Length: 243
Image (tube, rainbow, N blue to C red; front, side, top):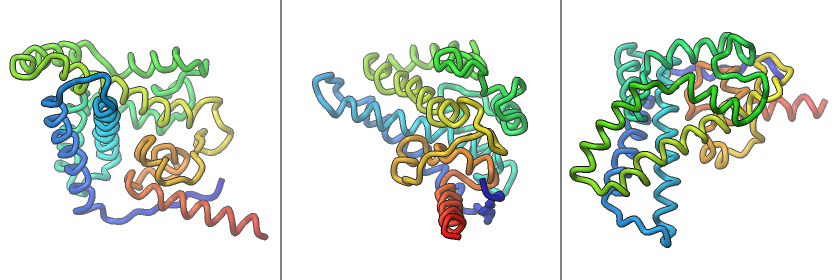
């Protein structure tokens, strides 16, 4: 792979606007879906699940960017937004995620990497991924919230549009953001793979985090600029191969 390409520009105010945009879309979509008549014969139900799953993933990606200081250059604001995005995603605790994520960057695909499972087995690896980041407090807080919300929202809607998309999002994050990039311990500087250049699919699949080598190569680049890193590396490859 080529030398690191760093697209480091001031993220203010775009980082904050994008972060609050993701949070607002998640919240607005949830409000609409919780009022929707759940009909499993209707494609709108399944579309709603997919959209809400993608927006849950956006919450986590926002928290992730905050861990790299990429939501705002103001440290307190940056961490506050990251904390909010994480807590909205089934009560994930930002300050628990923070050190583990930086351990992942320091020790990619080694026994010290909390995101890695040497077996390469999808199910064992996913179980490790979940048990590393999910704790009993989250189950307790989710249970309390569920029982309060069901006083005013149909229980079926809560399960289908609030709980199920959160679970599906963990699969999306794991498969596209951890399993595919790191399985088999790729032999390069960052032990990471990358998706082929397709910005539409890269966004839909996991907010450009399929461009995972690029993320490890340029951790100071926010998710919404990762496609530029991919473009630069793609152009470099074309130039190199033409010589």
